[in-house]
Length: 222
Length: 231
Ligand code: B12
Image (cartoon, rainbow over all chains, first blue to last red; front, side, top):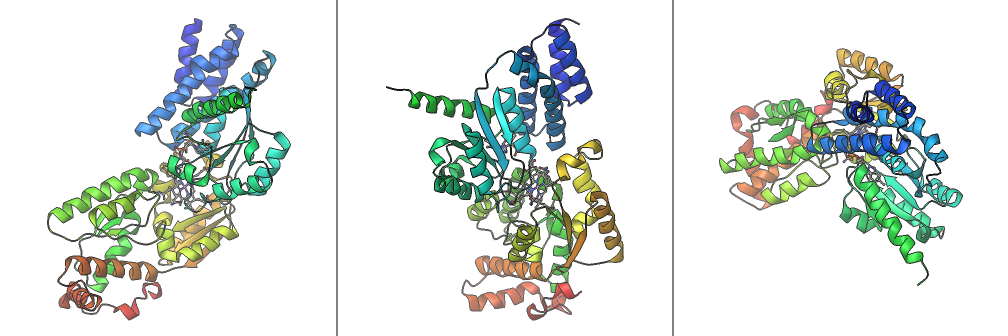
Protein backbone atom coordinates (compact mmCIF):
# COMPACT_ATOMS: atom_id res chain seq x y z
CA UNK A 1 0.00 0.00 0.00
CA UNK A 2 1.39 3.40 -0.91
CA UNK A 3 1.02 6.29 1.53
CA UNK A 4 -1.57 7.81 -0.78
CA UNK A 5 -3.56 4.59 -0.85
CA UNK A 6 -3.39 4.34 2.91
CA UNK A 7 -4.67 7.87 3.38
CA UNK A 8 -7.50 7.18 0.96
CA UNK A 9 -8.40 3.96 2.77
CA UNK A 10 -8.24 5.70 6.15
CA UNK A 11 -10.55 8.40 4.82
CA UNK A 12 -13.03 5.82 3.48
CA UNK A 13 -13.03 3.74 6.67
CA UNK A 14 -13.52 6.81 8.86
CA UNK A 15 -16.40 7.92 6.66
CA UNK A 16 -18.23 4.64 7.24
CA UNK A 17 -17.19 4.43 10.88
CA UNK A 18 -15.17 1.23 10.65
CA UNK A 19 -13.41 1.67 14.01
CA UNK A 20 -11.12 -1.39 13.99
CA UNK A 21 -9.91 -0.65 10.42
CA UNK A 22 -9.31 3.01 11.27
CA UNK A 23 -7.22 2.01 14.25
CA UNK A 24 -5.21 -0.50 12.25
CA UNK A 25 -4.60 1.92 9.38
CA UNK A 26 -3.50 4.57 11.85
CA UNK A 27 -0.87 2.20 13.24
CA UNK A 28 0.16 1.08 9.75
CA UNK A 29 0.42 4.69 8.60
CA UNK A 30 2.65 5.57 11.53
CA UNK A 31 4.80 2.52 10.83
CA UNK A 32 5.13 3.75 7.22
CA UNK A 33 6.41 7.04 8.61
CA UNK A 34 3.33 9.00 7.73
CA UNK A 35 3.32 11.65 10.46
CA UNK A 36 0.37 12.07 12.80
CA UNK A 37 -0.41 15.41 11.15
CA UNK A 38 -0.71 13.79 7.73
CA UNK A 39 -3.09 11.14 9.06
CA UNK A 40 -5.13 13.78 10.81
CA UNK A 41 -5.27 16.52 8.19
CA UNK A 42 -5.25 14.41 5.05
CA UNK A 43 -7.63 11.65 6.10
CA UNK A 44 -9.36 11.80 9.48
CA UNK A 45 -10.50 15.43 9.60
CA UNK A 46 -11.60 15.60 5.94
CA UNK A 47 -13.57 12.38 6.50
CA UNK A 48 -15.37 13.79 9.50
CA UNK A 49 -16.08 17.00 7.59
CA UNK A 50 -17.65 14.92 4.85
CA UNK A 51 -19.70 13.06 7.49
CA UNK A 52 -20.97 16.44 8.71
CA UNK A 53 -21.83 17.49 5.17
CA UNK A 54 -23.73 14.25 4.54
CA UNK A 55 -25.61 14.70 7.82
CA UNK A 56 -26.51 18.21 6.74
CA UNK A 57 -27.82 16.91 3.40
CA UNK A 58 -29.83 14.20 5.15
CA UNK A 59 -27.78 11.34 3.63
CA UNK A 60 -26.46 10.37 7.06
CA UNK A 61 -28.36 10.27 10.32
CA UNK A 62 -27.21 10.21 13.94
CA UNK A 63 -25.87 6.62 14.09
CA UNK A 64 -23.63 7.11 11.05
CA UNK A 65 -22.36 10.34 12.58
CA UNK A 66 -21.74 8.56 15.88
CA UNK A 67 -19.81 5.61 14.53
CA UNK A 68 -17.64 7.87 12.38
CA UNK A 69 -16.96 10.13 15.37
CA UNK A 70 -16.06 7.14 17.51
CA UNK A 71 -13.75 5.76 14.84
CA UNK A 72 -11.93 9.08 14.67
CA UNK A 73 -11.81 9.32 18.48
CA UNK A 74 -10.10 5.91 18.53
CA UNK A 75 -7.43 7.14 16.14
CA UNK A 76 -7.00 10.34 18.16
CA UNK A 77 -6.17 8.25 21.23
CA UNK A 78 -3.17 6.89 19.32
CA UNK A 79 -2.16 10.19 17.77
CA UNK A 80 -2.59 12.42 20.82
CA UNK A 81 0.67 11.49 22.59
CA UNK A 82 2.58 11.61 19.31
CA UNK A 83 1.27 15.06 18.47
CA UNK A 84 2.36 16.19 21.92
CA UNK A 85 5.82 14.70 21.29
CA UNK A 86 6.27 16.51 17.98
CA UNK A 87 6.05 19.66 20.07
CA UNK A 88 2.95 20.76 18.18
CA UNK A 89 1.72 23.36 20.63
CA UNK A 90 -1.92 23.41 21.59
CA UNK A 91 -3.50 26.33 19.76
CA UNK A 92 -5.83 27.00 22.67
CA UNK A 93 -7.76 25.44 25.51
CA UNK A 94 -11.47 24.75 25.34
CA UNK A 95 -13.75 23.78 28.22
CA UNK A 96 -16.95 22.15 26.96
CA UNK A 97 -20.12 20.88 28.55
CA UNK A 98 -23.79 20.15 27.98
CA UNK A 99 -25.85 22.51 30.12
CA UNK A 100 -27.74 21.63 33.28
CA UNK A 101 -30.94 19.66 32.70
CA UNK A 102 -29.80 18.33 29.34
CA UNK A 103 -28.23 14.96 28.62
CA UNK A 104 -27.82 15.24 24.82
CA UNK A 105 -24.09 14.93 24.20
CA UNK A 106 -23.55 13.47 20.73
CA UNK A 107 -23.22 16.91 19.12
CA UNK A 108 -20.92 18.16 21.84
CA UNK A 109 -18.69 15.09 21.61
CA UNK A 110 -18.29 15.59 17.87
CA UNK A 111 -17.35 19.21 18.43
CA UNK A 112 -14.77 18.03 20.98
CA UNK A 113 -13.26 15.58 18.50
CA UNK A 114 -12.96 18.25 15.81
CA UNK A 115 -11.50 20.76 18.27
CA UNK A 116 -8.95 18.22 19.35
CA UNK A 117 -8.16 17.31 15.77
CA UNK A 118 -7.58 21.00 15.04
CA UNK A 119 -5.00 21.19 17.84
CA UNK A 120 -7.03 22.52 20.76
CA UNK A 121 -6.73 21.06 24.21
CA UNK A 122 -10.24 20.04 25.21
CA UNK A 123 -11.54 19.66 28.74
CA UNK A 124 -14.93 18.00 28.65
CA UNK A 125 -17.11 18.53 31.69
CA UNK A 126 -19.74 16.05 30.45
CA UNK A 127 -23.50 16.54 30.63
CA UNK A 128 -25.84 18.37 32.98
CA UNK A 129 -23.14 20.82 33.92
CA UNK A 130 -24.32 23.41 36.43
CA UNK A 131 -23.22 27.06 36.13
CA UNK A 132 -21.01 26.76 39.23
CA UNK A 133 -19.13 23.89 37.61
CA UNK A 134 -18.42 25.96 34.50
CA UNK A 135 -17.21 28.80 36.74
CA UNK A 136 -14.94 26.43 38.68
CA UNK A 137 -13.53 25.03 35.45
CA UNK A 138 -12.70 28.51 34.15
CA UNK A 139 -10.90 29.26 37.43
CA UNK A 140 -9.03 25.99 37.34
CA UNK A 141 -8.04 25.75 33.67
CA UNK A 142 -8.11 29.39 32.47
CA UNK A 143 -9.39 28.24 29.06
CA UNK A 144 -9.40 30.48 26.01
CA UNK A 145 -12.87 29.29 25.10
CA UNK A 146 -15.82 27.87 26.99
CA UNK A 147 -18.50 26.02 25.02
CA UNK A 148 -22.08 25.34 26.09
CA UNK A 149 -24.21 22.80 24.28
CA UNK A 150 -28.02 22.48 24.60
CA UNK A 151 -30.62 20.48 22.66
CA UNK A 152 -33.84 21.24 24.49
CA UNK A 153 -35.95 24.38 24.35
CA UNK A 154 -36.18 24.14 28.12
CA UNK A 155 -32.41 24.02 28.67
CA UNK A 156 -31.31 26.75 26.24
CA UNK A 157 -31.92 29.45 28.88
CA UNK A 158 -29.02 27.90 30.80
CA UNK A 159 -26.67 29.68 28.36
CA UNK A 160 -27.72 32.97 29.89
CA UNK A 161 -27.53 31.52 33.42
CA UNK A 162 -23.98 30.30 32.72
CA UNK A 163 -22.92 33.63 31.27
CA UNK A 164 -24.41 35.46 34.27
CA UNK A 165 -22.56 33.12 36.62
CA UNK A 166 -19.29 33.86 34.81
CA UNK A 167 -19.99 37.60 35.00
CA UNK A 168 -20.80 37.37 38.69
CA UNK A 169 -17.52 35.58 39.31
CA UNK A 170 -15.72 38.35 37.42
CA UNK A 171 -14.58 35.90 34.72
CA UNK A 172 -16.78 36.81 31.76
CA UNK A 173 -14.13 38.94 30.04
CA UNK A 174 -11.43 36.34 30.44
CA UNK A 175 -13.01 33.72 28.24
CA UNK A 176 -14.63 33.46 24.83
CA UNK A 177 -18.12 31.99 25.15
CA UNK A 178 -19.37 29.76 22.34
CA UNK A 179 -22.79 28.14 22.20
CA UNK A 180 -24.37 25.48 20.03
CA UNK A 181 -26.83 22.61 19.73
CA UNK A 182 -29.78 21.82 17.47
CA UNK A 183 -32.18 24.54 18.70
CA UNK A 184 -29.54 27.28 18.82
CA UNK A 185 -29.30 30.03 16.23
CA UNK A 186 -26.98 32.99 15.72
CA UNK A 187 -29.81 35.28 16.85
CA UNK A 188 -30.25 33.32 20.07
CA UNK A 189 -26.50 33.37 20.67
CA UNK A 190 -26.56 37.16 20.23
CA UNK A 191 -29.50 37.57 22.58
CA UNK A 192 -27.82 35.68 25.42
CA UNK A 193 -24.58 37.56 24.85
CA UNK A 194 -22.38 34.71 23.62
CA UNK A 195 -19.29 35.58 21.58
CA UNK A 196 -19.75 32.85 19.01
CA UNK A 197 -22.10 30.25 17.60
CA UNK A 198 -21.62 27.49 15.06
CA UNK A 199 -24.09 25.13 13.45
CA UNK A 200 -21.75 22.16 13.26
CA UNK A 201 -18.41 20.86 14.45
CA UNK A 202 -16.36 22.00 11.43
CA UNK A 203 -17.84 25.48 11.58
CA UNK A 204 -17.19 25.54 15.34
CA UNK A 205 -13.46 25.07 14.74
CA UNK A 206 -13.34 27.80 12.11
CA UNK A 207 -15.28 30.21 14.32
CA UNK A 208 -13.18 29.37 17.39
CA UNK A 209 -9.97 30.10 15.52
CA UNK A 210 -11.38 33.41 14.26
CA UNK A 211 -12.49 34.49 17.72
CA UNK A 212 -9.19 33.47 19.24
CA UNK A 213 -7.20 35.35 16.63
CA UNK A 214 -9.29 38.44 17.10
CA UNK A 215 -8.81 38.32 20.86
CA UNK A 216 -5.08 37.71 20.65
CA UNK A 217 -4.70 40.55 18.17
CA UNK A 218 -6.67 42.86 20.44
CA UNK A 219 -4.41 41.90 23.33
CA UNK A 220 -1.22 42.91 21.47
CA UNK A 221 0.26 46.19 22.60
CA UNK A 222 -0.47 48.94 20.06
CA UNK B 1 -56.56 18.14 11.20
CA UNK B 2 -52.95 17.50 10.38
CA UNK B 3 -51.72 15.27 13.14
CA UNK B 4 -48.41 13.93 14.29
CA UNK B 5 -48.38 10.19 13.70
CA UNK B 6 -47.59 9.68 17.37
CA UNK B 7 -50.91 11.30 18.30
CA UNK B 8 -53.05 10.43 15.30
CA UNK B 9 -54.59 7.31 16.89
CA UNK B 10 -55.76 9.27 19.93
CA UNK B 11 -56.85 12.19 17.75
CA UNK B 12 -59.01 9.95 15.56
CA UNK B 13 -60.55 8.27 18.57
CA UNK B 14 -61.39 11.60 20.18
CA UNK B 15 -62.71 13.16 16.97
CA UNK B 16 -64.96 10.17 16.33
CA UNK B 17 -66.25 10.07 19.87
CA UNK B 18 -66.90 13.81 19.86
CA UNK B 19 -68.46 13.60 16.43
CA UNK B 20 -66.27 16.30 14.94
CA UNK B 21 -66.44 16.44 11.20
CA UNK B 22 -62.73 16.37 10.74
CA UNK B 23 -60.46 14.54 8.40
CA UNK B 24 -57.36 13.44 10.29
CA UNK B 25 -54.26 13.53 8.10
CA UNK B 26 -51.31 11.98 9.90
CA UNK B 27 -47.70 12.77 9.16
CA UNK B 28 -45.08 10.12 9.97
CA UNK B 29 -44.09 10.21 13.63
CA UNK B 30 -40.53 9.45 12.62
CA UNK B 31 -40.23 13.00 11.29
CA UNK B 32 -39.40 13.83 14.90
CA UNK B 33 -35.91 12.73 14.22
CA UNK B 34 -35.72 15.24 11.39
CA UNK B 35 -37.79 18.07 12.82
CA UNK B 36 -37.00 20.43 9.93
CA UNK B 37 -39.20 18.26 7.75
CA UNK B 38 -42.20 18.53 10.11
CA UNK B 39 -42.80 22.20 9.36
CA UNK B 40 -42.34 21.71 5.62
CA UNK B 41 -44.68 18.73 5.42
CA UNK B 42 -47.30 20.31 7.69
CA UNK B 43 -47.26 23.44 5.56
CA UNK B 44 -47.69 21.38 2.40
CA UNK B 45 -50.71 19.47 3.75
CA UNK B 46 -52.30 22.52 5.34
CA UNK B 47 -51.79 24.54 2.15
CA UNK B 48 -53.51 21.81 0.17
CA UNK B 49 -56.46 21.72 2.55
CA UNK B 50 -56.82 25.50 2.48
CA UNK B 51 -56.64 25.50 -1.30
CA UNK B 52 -59.57 23.10 -1.31
CA UNK B 53 -61.51 25.55 0.82
CA UNK B 54 -61.22 23.43 3.97
CA UNK B 55 -60.18 24.71 7.36
CA UNK B 56 -56.97 23.32 8.80
CA UNK B 57 -55.45 22.91 12.24
CA UNK B 58 -52.23 21.30 13.39
CA UNK B 59 -52.45 18.53 15.98
CA UNK B 60 -48.79 19.13 16.70
CA UNK B 61 -46.94 20.77 19.55
CA UNK B 62 -43.68 22.56 18.70
CA UNK B 63 -42.18 19.07 18.43
CA UNK B 64 -38.57 20.08 18.13
CA UNK B 65 -39.16 22.40 15.21
CA UNK B 66 -37.94 25.16 17.50
CA UNK B 67 -40.51 27.68 16.30
CA UNK B 68 -40.70 26.65 12.64
CA UNK B 69 -44.23 25.29 13.09
CA UNK B 70 -45.28 28.56 14.71
CA UNK B 71 -44.03 30.36 11.62
CA UNK B 72 -46.18 28.06 9.46
CA UNK B 73 -49.13 28.79 11.76
CA UNK B 74 -48.75 32.52 11.49
CA UNK B 75 -48.19 32.39 7.73
CA UNK B 76 -51.29 30.28 7.09
CA UNK B 77 -53.38 31.46 10.04
CA UNK B 78 -53.49 28.05 11.72
CA UNK B 79 -53.62 26.96 15.34
CA UNK B 80 -51.52 24.20 16.92
CA UNK B 81 -51.48 22.30 20.20
CA UNK B 82 -49.83 24.13 23.08
CA UNK B 83 -46.52 23.00 24.52
CA UNK B 84 -43.14 21.86 23.33
CA UNK B 85 -43.91 18.24 22.55
CA UNK B 86 -46.63 15.64 22.95
CA UNK B 87 -45.47 14.96 26.50
CA UNK B 88 -46.57 18.49 27.41
CA UNK B 89 -49.87 17.95 25.62
CA UNK B 90 -50.56 14.66 27.37
CA UNK B 91 -49.20 15.31 30.85
CA UNK B 92 -49.24 19.10 31.11
CA UNK B 93 -46.20 21.34 30.63
CA UNK B 94 -45.84 22.12 34.34
CA UNK B 95 -45.86 18.45 35.24
CA UNK B 96 -43.25 17.69 32.60
CA UNK B 97 -41.06 20.52 33.82
CA UNK B 98 -41.28 19.07 37.34
CA UNK B 99 -40.43 15.59 36.08
CA UNK B 100 -37.29 16.77 34.33
CA UNK B 101 -36.33 19.03 37.19
CA UNK B 102 -36.57 16.16 39.65
CA UNK B 103 -34.45 13.95 37.38
CA UNK B 104 -32.99 15.32 34.13
CA UNK B 105 -31.97 11.79 33.23
CA UNK B 106 -35.60 10.88 32.60
CA UNK B 107 -36.49 9.02 29.44
CA UNK B 108 -40.14 9.52 28.62
CA UNK B 109 -42.39 6.99 26.93
CA UNK B 110 -45.93 7.34 25.62
CA UNK B 111 -48.22 4.52 24.48
CA UNK B 112 -47.01 5.21 20.96
CA UNK B 113 -43.36 4.92 21.95
CA UNK B 114 -43.97 1.81 24.02
CA UNK B 115 -45.73 0.15 21.13
CA UNK B 116 -43.22 1.27 18.51
CA UNK B 117 -40.01 1.39 20.54
CA UNK B 118 -38.19 -1.00 18.26
CA UNK B 119 -38.93 0.91 15.10
CA UNK B 120 -39.18 4.50 16.35
CA UNK B 121 -36.22 4.39 18.70
CA UNK B 122 -34.00 1.33 18.27
CA UNK B 123 -34.04 1.22 14.47
CA UNK B 124 -34.00 5.00 13.98
CA UNK B 125 -31.01 5.42 16.27
CA UNK B 126 -29.27 2.54 14.50
CA UNK B 127 -29.23 0.38 17.62
CA UNK B 128 -30.46 -2.62 15.64
CA UNK B 129 -27.40 -2.37 13.40
CA UNK B 130 -24.93 -1.05 15.98
CA UNK B 131 -25.99 -2.32 19.41
CA UNK B 132 -22.62 -1.18 20.73
CA UNK B 133 -23.88 2.42 20.51
CA UNK B 134 -26.32 1.87 23.39
CA UNK B 135 -24.14 3.57 26.03
CA UNK B 136 -23.46 6.49 23.68
CA UNK B 137 -27.16 7.19 23.57
CA UNK B 138 -28.44 6.21 26.96
CA UNK B 139 -25.67 6.14 29.55
CA UNK B 140 -26.90 9.32 31.23
CA UNK B 141 -30.40 8.08 31.92
CA UNK B 142 -31.56 7.20 35.43
CA UNK B 143 -35.22 6.29 35.04
CA UNK B 144 -38.05 5.74 32.58
CA UNK B 145 -41.42 7.38 32.89
CA UNK B 146 -44.30 6.01 30.86
CA UNK B 147 -47.05 8.56 30.32
CA UNK B 148 -49.87 6.07 29.81
CA UNK B 149 -52.88 7.05 27.73
CA UNK B 150 -54.50 3.65 28.02
CA UNK B 151 -52.80 1.45 30.58
CA UNK B 152 -53.32 -2.02 29.19
CA UNK B 153 -51.61 -5.24 30.27
CA UNK B 154 -49.94 -5.79 26.89
CA UNK B 155 -48.49 -2.28 26.87
CA UNK B 156 -47.53 -2.62 30.49
CA UNK B 157 -45.55 -5.76 29.71
CA UNK B 158 -43.86 -4.03 26.79
CA UNK B 159 -42.99 -0.97 28.90
CA UNK B 160 -41.50 -3.29 31.48
CA UNK B 161 -39.43 -5.01 28.81
CA UNK B 162 -38.10 -1.65 27.63
CA UNK B 163 -37.19 -0.73 31.21
CA UNK B 164 -35.30 -4.01 31.49
CA UNK B 165 -33.44 -3.20 28.30
CA UNK B 166 -32.33 0.07 29.93
CA UNK B 167 -31.77 -1.63 33.27
CA UNK B 168 -33.63 1.29 34.84
CA UNK B 169 -36.70 1.70 37.04
CA UNK B 170 -40.02 2.43 35.35
CA UNK B 171 -42.59 4.83 36.73
CA UNK B 172 -46.08 5.01 35.23
CA UNK B 173 -48.17 8.17 35.12
CA UNK B 174 -51.67 7.67 33.82
CA UNK B 175 -52.28 10.81 31.81
CA UNK B 176 -55.21 9.55 29.79
CA UNK B 177 -56.11 11.81 26.87
CA UNK B 178 -58.19 14.46 28.65
CA UNK B 179 -55.63 17.24 28.15
CA UNK B 180 -55.20 16.32 24.50
CA UNK B 181 -58.95 16.37 24.08
CA UNK B 182 -59.26 19.82 25.67
CA UNK B 183 -56.51 21.12 23.36
CA UNK B 184 -58.15 19.61 20.28
CA UNK B 185 -61.42 21.16 21.32
CA UNK B 186 -59.72 24.54 21.44
CA UNK B 187 -58.28 24.02 17.95
CA UNK B 188 -61.63 23.02 16.50
CA UNK B 189 -63.35 25.99 18.11
CA UNK B 190 -60.68 28.31 16.82
CA UNK B 191 -60.84 26.97 13.27
CA UNK B 192 -64.61 27.14 13.23
CA UNK B 193 -64.54 30.59 14.76
CA UNK B 194 -62.06 31.86 12.23
CA UNK B 195 -63.48 30.52 9.01
CA UNK B 196 -67.07 30.01 10.08
CA UNK B 197 -70.11 32.21 10.03
CA UNK B 198 -69.25 34.24 13.13
CA UNK B 199 -66.11 35.55 14.79
CA UNK B 200 -67.49 36.51 18.20
CA UNK B 201 -67.17 33.99 21.01
CA UNK B 202 -70.91 33.57 21.45
CA UNK B 203 -71.40 32.50 17.89
CA UNK B 204 -68.27 30.40 17.99
CA UNK B 205 -69.93 27.98 20.41
CA UNK B 206 -72.86 27.61 18.06
CA UNK B 207 -70.46 27.07 15.18
CA UNK B 208 -68.76 24.37 17.19
CA UNK B 209 -72.07 22.71 17.84
CA UNK B 210 -72.62 22.84 14.13
CA UNK B 211 -69.21 21.32 13.50
CA UNK B 212 -70.05 18.49 15.83
CA UNK B 213 -72.92 17.47 13.54
CA UNK B 214 -76.06 16.06 15.15
CA UNK B 215 -75.81 12.49 13.90
CA UNK B 216 -72.19 11.84 14.78
CA UNK B 217 -72.42 13.76 18.02
CA UNK B 218 -74.91 11.28 19.36
CA UNK B 219 -73.43 9.46 22.27
CA UNK B 220 -70.39 11.72 22.32
CA UNK B 221 -68.99 13.02 25.54
CA UNK B 222 -69.75 16.72 25.91
CA UNK B 223 -67.07 19.25 26.72
CA UNK B 224 -67.79 18.92 30.43
CA UNK B 225 -67.13 15.24 30.28
CA UNK B 226 -63.93 15.51 28.29
CA UNK B 227 -62.47 12.84 30.43
CA UNK B 228 -60.60 10.65 27.99
CA UNK B 229 -58.32 9.77 30.86
CA UNK B 230 -61.08 7.94 32.61
CA UNK B 231 -61.54 5.56 29.75
C1 B12 C 1 -30.31 11.61 19.27
C2 B12 C 1 -31.40 12.31 20.05
C3 B12 C 1 -31.64 11.88 21.34
C4 B12 C 1 -30.80 10.80 22.03
C5 B12 C 1 -29.62 11.54 22.73
C6 B12 C 1 -28.40 10.68 22.96
C7 B12 C 1 -27.22 11.47 23.43
N1 B12 C 1 -26.39 10.81 24.20
O1 B12 C 1 -27.01 12.62 23.09
C8 B12 C 1 -31.85 10.25 23.02
C9 B12 C 1 -32.67 9.21 22.30
C10 B12 C 1 -31.30 9.63 24.28
C11 B12 C 1 -32.70 11.51 23.25
C12 B12 C 1 -33.41 11.78 24.39
C13 B12 C 1 -34.29 12.84 24.55
N2 B12 C 1 -34.64 13.71 23.58
CO1 B12 C 1 -33.71 13.88 21.91
N3 B12 C 1 -33.13 13.98 20.13
C14 B12 C 1 -32.18 13.37 19.48
C15 B12 C 1 -32.16 13.84 18.01
C16 B12 C 1 -32.88 12.79 17.16
C17 B12 C 1 -30.80 14.12 17.43
C18 B12 C 1 -29.89 15.01 18.27
C19 B12 C 1 -28.43 14.71 17.92
O2 B12 C 1 -27.70 14.11 18.70
N4 B12 C 1 -28.03 15.06 16.72
C20 B12 C 1 -26.71 14.74 16.23
C21 B12 C 1 -25.82 15.94 16.27
C22 B12 C 1 -24.44 15.53 15.83
O3 B12 C 1 -26.38 16.88 15.40
P1 B12 C 1 -26.33 18.45 15.49
O4 B12 C 1 -27.34 19.08 16.31
O5 B12 C 1 -26.34 18.93 14.11
O6 B12 C 1 -24.93 18.73 16.23
C23 B12 C 1 -24.07 19.75 15.80
C24 B12 C 1 -24.44 21.14 16.31
O7 B12 C 1 -25.55 21.14 17.15
C25 B12 C 1 -23.16 21.66 16.89
N5 B12 C 1 -23.05 21.77 18.34
C26 B12 C 1 -23.55 20.98 19.30
N6 B12 C 1 -23.15 21.41 20.51
C27 B12 C 1 -22.39 22.48 20.33
C28 B12 C 1 -21.72 23.31 21.23
C29 B12 C 1 -20.98 24.39 20.75
C30 B12 C 1 -20.27 25.27 21.71
C31 B12 C 1 -20.93 24.65 19.35
C32 B12 C 1 -20.17 25.80 18.86
C33 B12 C 1 -21.59 23.81 18.45
C34 B12 C 1 -22.30 22.74 18.94
O8 B12 C 1 -22.13 20.77 16.45
C35 B12 C 1 -22.69 19.47 16.38
C36 B12 C 1 -21.82 18.54 15.56
O9 B12 C 1 -21.77 18.88 14.20
C37 B12 C 1 -33.00 15.18 18.12
C38 B12 C 1 -33.76 15.60 16.86
C39 B12 C 1 -32.84 16.27 15.89
N7 B12 C 1 -32.75 15.76 14.70
O10 B12 C 1 -32.19 17.25 16.24
C40 B12 C 1 -33.91 14.88 19.31
C41 B12 C 1 -34.45 16.04 20.18
C42 B12 C 1 -33.36 17.05 20.43
N8 B12 C 1 -34.79 15.36 21.44
C43 B12 C 1 -35.87 15.81 21.98
C44 B12 C 1 -36.45 15.32 23.19
C45 B12 C 1 -37.78 15.90 23.57
C46 B12 C 1 -35.79 14.34 23.96
C47 B12 C 1 -36.31 13.71 25.27
C48 B12 C 1 -36.97 14.65 26.26
C49 B12 C 1 -37.25 12.58 24.78
C50 B12 C 1 -37.69 11.50 25.75
N9 B12 C 1 -38.35 10.51 25.16
O11 B12 C 1 -37.47 11.52 26.95
C51 B12 C 1 -35.01 13.11 25.83
C52 B12 C 1 -34.18 14.18 26.59
C53 B12 C 1 -33.91 13.99 28.04
C54 B12 C 1 -32.97 15.06 28.56
N10 B12 C 1 -33.20 15.51 29.79
O12 B12 C 1 -32.07 15.52 27.91
C55 B12 C 1 -36.50 16.91 21.16
C56 B12 C 1 -36.33 18.30 21.76
C57 B12 C 1 -37.61 19.12 21.65
C58 B12 C 1 -37.55 20.40 22.36
N11 B12 C 1 -38.38 21.31 21.92
O13 B12 C 1 -36.81 20.66 23.26
C59 B12 C 1 -35.83 16.67 19.76
C60 B12 C 1 -35.68 17.92 18.90
C61 B12 C 1 -36.71 15.63 19.02
C62 B12 C 1 -38.09 16.16 18.66
N12 B12 C 1 -38.34 16.46 17.41
O14 B12 C 1 -38.96 16.30 19.47
N13 B12 C 1 -32.64 12.31 22.16
